[in-house]
Length: 60
Image 1 (cartoon, rainbow, N blue to C red):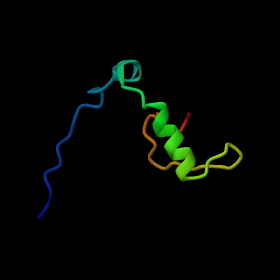
Image 2 (image 1 turned 90 degrees about the vertical axis):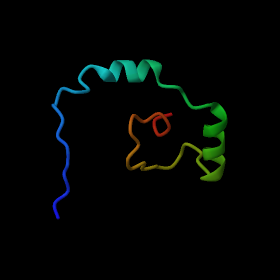
Image 3 (image 1 turned 60 degrees about the vertical axis):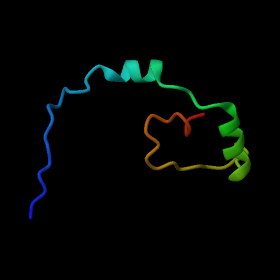
Image 4 (image 1 turned 90 degrees about the horizontal axis):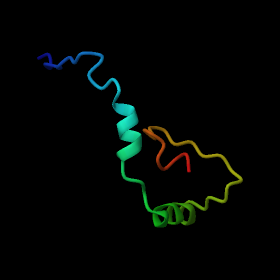
């Protein structure tokens, strides 16, 4: 059985990135503090975040 995978026009989300970046809720500082403590992040190592999306957690 072959799955029926829908196709979308390649321009469907064209121009949406600006709105996403501007209006997407930011994560609270408490989350960054928790992640830094839990994973012992001190800014001196390297971290690889596969699938980080827009980088709202990985970049800061």
